[in-house]
Image (tube, rainbow, N blue to C red; front, side, top):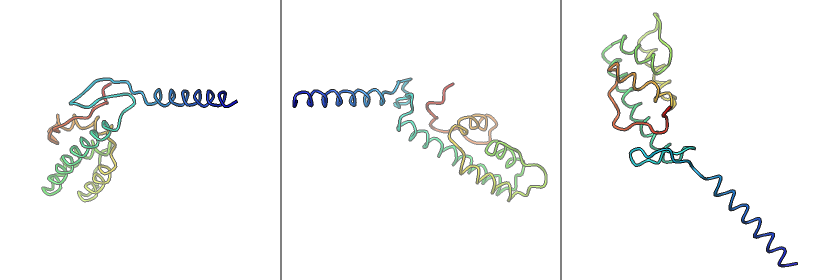
Length: 138
């Protein structure tokens, strides 16, 4: 009786161990700047992408502040089109646009920044980042 119970416990332990190792397997896609790019994403990728997003947001915020302080309504509207994904028509005050863009920038997702930031750089609205996102290749 005891031997049968031990075999059953060993069998259950083997099944649990097998499930744990197979569930945690990540598929290595590539290594970019020393970061293992995997599917599903690993915590290192999330942490890195958050750093990239912080730098992008800082650059956008600096460009917004420059536009706001110099009363450059055209530049602020251009920045708003990217960050908010909609434009500000006539009738919006500079203060209203600035506040709305700031709210949107606070809540923007990394994938959205990945899509819009290169175009913002091409239009010379913001400066390029020193590091880039990982894991968003198409």
